[in-house]
Length: 333
Image (cartoon, rainbow, N blue to C red):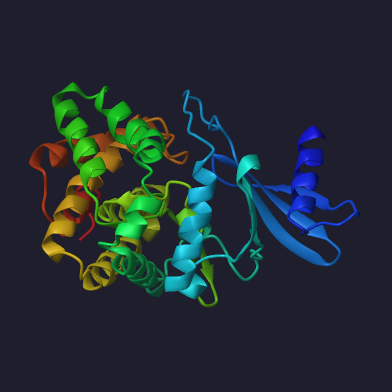
């Protein structure tokens, strides 16, 4: 009740709620924030409120100031690709919350749910790659963006430490490589990065994919966004084995359209960084602080380790090298 009371007063300060009592409904979402649906006077909108401690078993904390960078990312991305983000309706930095347009699941299904059910549309994947590259290209080499999103401390706390560094400690043979990869990634400053381009954070809207949850927003290495998303397509081959060939087709399409949009550096360089990150992120999703919830069988986790560890040692330079190693492990032609 206290939380709802505080939320209502924040919405009143933003001019989104009057004296009436709005209807507030918790929504399912990620582990790092409360997400709420608010209905009042015929209006419906969504509220996102950052949490200082993430909802995972490990002790994983991150500064709630990330909320304002998420708003800034959405505003920036919305100017570049207007249909790619919800509209921001209000933001109160001191409360760690912002308000955005509510997108009905009937018209904007979550991409993760579609993939789970075997509805793999290559066109959606290709457009994810195109939109991601457009945002990177429009912000590449921009000193204003670099200063505005100087969030190394947040990105390290919410991405590099729980994924690469925590995983490294569990695998001594590749520990130095993964720690070095984390440091190299943090030191690479190329473009505005979303940081959590995952199917659970993408809605398959009627006007194309819509990106959510940019609280890891950071001016850094765009290869992280590409690798992070491709990693999920690989892992979902184990979640829905029957859809695995289509998922690999989607991966190929996403990577191809993304790389076609790279104009800020040689494509081979961003692809090589992506290829090095990809197996490290694969391993992180079974042995890091945020393991994927759908790989509950030890045999599936072992398959991920058996594929990822040699690739981390080999440091591949192409997405195809990782993709083909994964396909070979799954006996997919």
